[in-house]
Amino acid sequence: MASFSIIITCYNHKAFIGDAVSSALAQTHPAGEVIVVDDASTDGSREVLEGYGDAIRFVAIRDNGGASAARNHGAAVATGDFLAYLDGDDVLQPWALQLFSLLVDARRPKLILGKLSWFTGPVSSLDKSVPPREVCFVEYETFMKKDRNYRASASAMVIERAAFDDVEGFTSGAWPLDDADLMLKLGYSGRTLGIISPSTAGYRQHAENTSRQVQKLIDGVHWLIRNERRNRYPGGSACRFERYSVLGGIVFFWLRKTLRLGLYLQFLKLLAGGWAMVLAAILRRCRVFLRGRRPVEIVPVPAPSA
Image 1 (cartoon, rainbow, N blue to C red):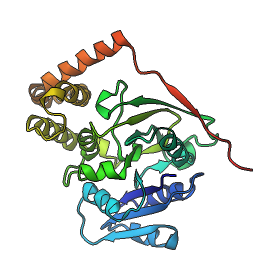
Image 2 (image 1 turned 180 degrees about the vertical axis):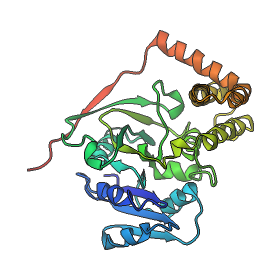
Image 3 (image 1 turned 30 degrees about the horizontal axis):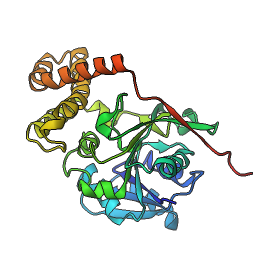
Image 4 (image 1 turned 90 degrees about the vertical axis):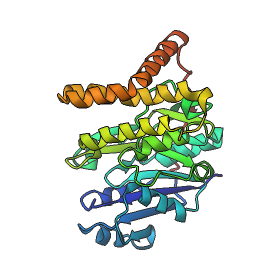
């Protein structure tokens, strides 16, 4: 049976980190270990984490190095066969690890794409009352073969440790799109399962969300485009169309966002750099429409023991 390491990264998440850790400790399928990496928080997060004692493996980083470095630090001390990441302001659904374990036992994937639910306010506002009776998923030969939307998030990815090591983990300094960059690096690592339902994690919406830092995210999209043009992602020229189409989905999202926000100069710059990728994404979407999507498969979830 495969083992899992839940890796939670925290930077000034005092108001939220308790919920994140508690959600990891409350899994119906116990984790091999819960690792919490505090990236030199200054708001009292460390004191909250020290209160969990031996229930977690607490790693305190002296100097802030950013999310990518913190996630790699967690992986460096992890002992599990699979790494399940969680941001310090998000939470895992109680059944998340059970679903991941079922899928690993059934298909032995390199990568599992979880499903997020968005919530605001207390964790009680996230629907987690009814345990699922089944998990619906789609299987792909590799991540690059996916035919459904997936919003890259550290809280919605489970990675085989060997595959993570093969691509040398998260790219240092890549924040805030280090998660999308990692997916591209893992693009041809092997079997990928995308969960359709139920959700596996709750993404908390609050004033400090990374998604609100529009300019940094736009800069991150340009950085992804430059990486592709410099041949930093696997697959070579034979797989360029697939990589372009995946990147094109990201570029298209931010083109729409810049228009809605009235950032017309940013729109033009992004269009100039990524128009070929957007075209590839449109062509791929048309092909999927004509051929149909991969079928959804179902695995029953055993009822919890009395």
